[in-house]
Amino acid sequence: MKVLLTNDDGVISAGIQIISRLLADKGWLLSVVAPDRERSGSGHSITSGVPVRVHPLDPGMFAPGVAAYSCDGTPTDCVTLGLDLLFPAADFVVSGINQGPNMGDDVTYSGTVCAAMESVILGRPAVAVSLCCTPQDRFRHNMTAALSAMAVLEYAERTGLPEGTLLNVNVPNELIKKIKGFRLTKRGQRRYIDKFKHIKDPHGKDCYWIGGRLEDADEDGSDVTAVKEGFVSVTPISMDMTHYGLLEEMRGKGVDSALAKSLNL
Image 1 (cartoon, rainbow, N blue to C red):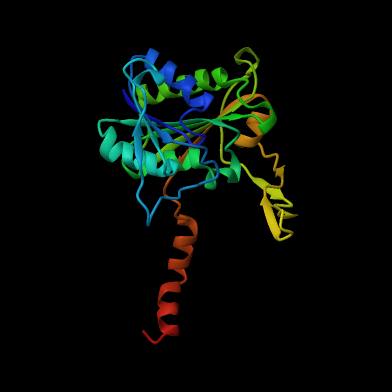
Image 2 (cartoon, one colour):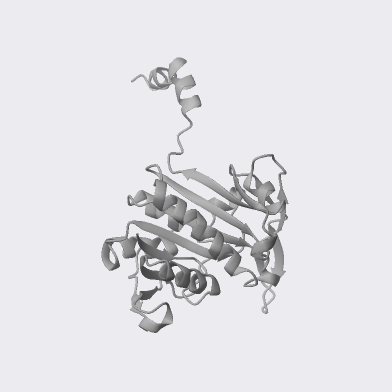
């Protein structure tokens, strides 16, 4: 398997360094294209209006023989450049290991998950991997996340993934021997309470720090609950966001004709 590896924590993050070694040890052909700095929370944004720069890295930075590049763009830019120009032979994208969870509603903000989404848009299957640590205990159990990710990747290599689908993997921040197993999950719900904190800058002007505290919904079968109970969650995510039930309901009610009539069309 030919793998393009990226992340949103930056090319020197411990997570991407560790998983790159396991991917190379597996014998898969690997290339790395990742942001030159942390781009967490960048979602599915792309760089426009200014050029994107790519810098080749020392071949010894990752496993021997692995071509690696840093990019001053977003994680989505990295995947686009990687698949279109730098490593078009790639047939799979791995995004991570993210230092922090990407569960529930986080997937819409996450540069890690959205990099995997871009891969799917460009016709390659993808896996996004996140270690569910806090900012205070980052980097402790990246090997647990890497080993969990390899198990998922080996499954994906054997069976393939449906077109338009990625797997979002979230790993508890524990030693591998303390992980209870894997759970196939749905995307749960996470809400940020008190999302904006009002502060003053050194000149006394108003600023707002975005963050807040989390309030998770404890749902059976969700990624949030699985990780909370000590399991690695694996959530299939489809890029087709059409609500087919509502679509058919609206068609049945003739909503399109009613809307046209309202404009005398």
